[in-house]
Image (tube, rainbow, N blue to C red):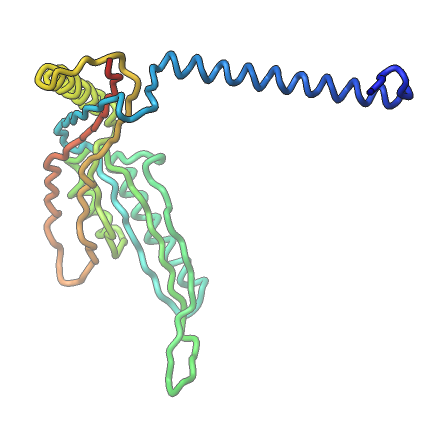
Length: 255
């Protein structure tokens, strides 16, 4: 028979600590099972897919884009790096000056790319260095769409030789998303009420909510490259409208 008092003091301490740890483990394990049982009772088995039902709704708001993002590019070639960089800086500074004169703030003018690379020619399997190519891009945010044609035309006239893309979008869509969300939730609730009447369902409390947001992609325009041969009229940009959509799913317990 095990006699605790006959054990050496060190072994008594080890046995005591072991029993204490085991007791704590059993207490916590039992407490965890109690919590799980309470949650299961409280949710009335909500994790069981056969005891819940879900309804979806979609809200859609049409919005006219109010902001444009323009990618303005400049490609400069030359025999040496110093000449290329000086010529590029002169032209790009003129473009930036023009943009600021037209009311574009510094925060809305960002250098998005600056790369200088060697240019080689290949002849009979051999390559020779013939110069350098510098590519620089500005990403410009235009907050007055009435100026977009003027901005595109003037940027090229000031020295840029590429307009790589133009995208139109709604700058602050949150208020519109809230309106679409309200419409989506209303639609889902109406479906829940109607379906419960038709199918004879007894809906309990709401136990799940999820949503997804989608919108038409921004409008992109093809690359425009500066060409010689006289001035061309400023391009006409039509913003049109885009849809802002919110989809929601409401999940109810079945009584």
